Length: 193
Length: 193
Image 1 (tube, rainbow over the protein chains, first blue to last red):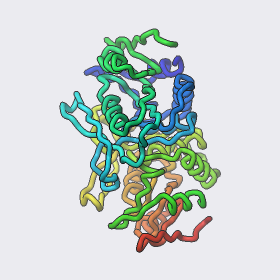
Image 2 (image 1 turned 90 degrees about the vertical axis):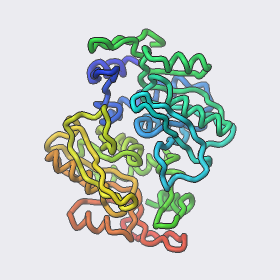
Image 3 (image 1 turned 60 degrees about the vertical axis):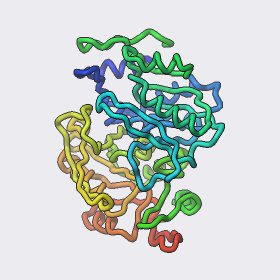
Image 4 (image 1 turned 30 degrees about the vertical axis):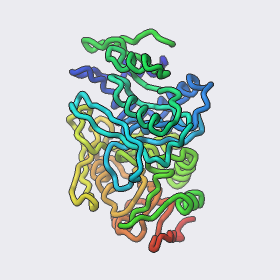
């Protein structure tokens, strides 16, 4: 997606430890016009699928999922990271290993909000080691729903997540795949657009 | 806002400790069509104001703010609750006292994303004791920006927040104000619609 790649080049910055900072437009300040184009592109890529719900994880996936859901005319559910007294006791759980924090945590969705047989599209901001999407897939599997695919805004193509998830036959659609970002120079993989 | 009130009556549940659970449509599963109507109503109520940015706090405010921002054609910034290595070192800070957790925590926005003189609209899901909006106001004040007002989806009119904020001359626009919710019966305040 050219508009997104231009935005990453213009506004993104590379930090030590393979961190791509996109807080100018994607996960602190939100460029709503860009998110609308992102939503339209996800709709184009999953147009043939009869999606009934969009699933994401708090925090960074929420705005992208909400804007995208407008093009699919379906509700969003976001998995919660924290124990909350507002969360139902009956939940589907997924496990996510955080490499940066070196610990595993759980994400949860109330059993009320994913029904057996639903067609679920996962939406997230980043795909790096694939842990978040694997955790969300656990929730979809536990609900006996169908995982139609995952729409990712930015994939770090030099990390393992994309390979692992595609080997698992998940339809991963990343709108920008970064091949390398050494020496502060971002190179995209030439893939699909 | 009648549509919202109907939704609260139909889908909301009252739990012990003055908790109104609206996770069916507002803060776990998200009813995107409803959020669009909420966004349009905020636009109607703040139509005369030259708003340049919408400010909210993670987590529950994000989807509402993102959908609403489409009607104002402005970016969103959401204040972060956690220390994050993705957050700039230079931040504006606000303090929020959590009555449920009985402790104070900080919310932060990078100094890059609120400029002096900007016209800020705060958006949040709930107004109860007013702490979140007061914390966000601290951030707006620290940035020397103008707080135009705050759009709230559900105000618990029986708690003090609305009174405190209005006494502080903040233009609070709540789309549904709950007068009482004793014995699982929700009564709205008859105010503005």
